[in-house]
Image 1 (spheres, rainbow, N blue to C red):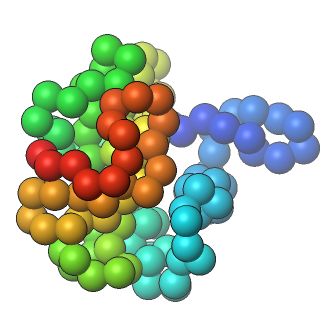
Image 2: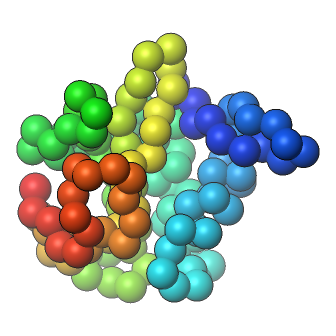
Image 3: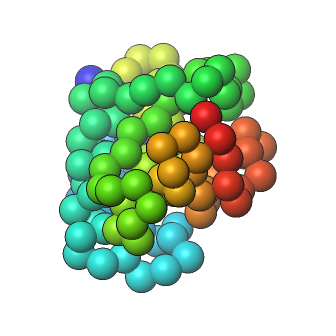
Length: 123
């Protein structure tokens, strides 16, 4: 099961709790998330931490295959999709946040690096 590393408070960097991950990700959104959105995001975080991601049609980030997981209804404002890669030693890195626009397209709100240019992507 992959861990996600980041700022854990007190000037320390380490394995983040699911609540710390949720706060970090919500801080990257262009909107204030509803409680339903946060619940869906938490489901996605759990999927990442339990290795339940799906392929993204060959997309990569820094040489690693990008996986994704979604929660919530397609096209609804409270849906969430996390894009991530698995790194060595059981570490996962979140590389994008978005939501389903349709069954095969996603609106990406935040992304790391240049694996996409934001906006709408198709898988």
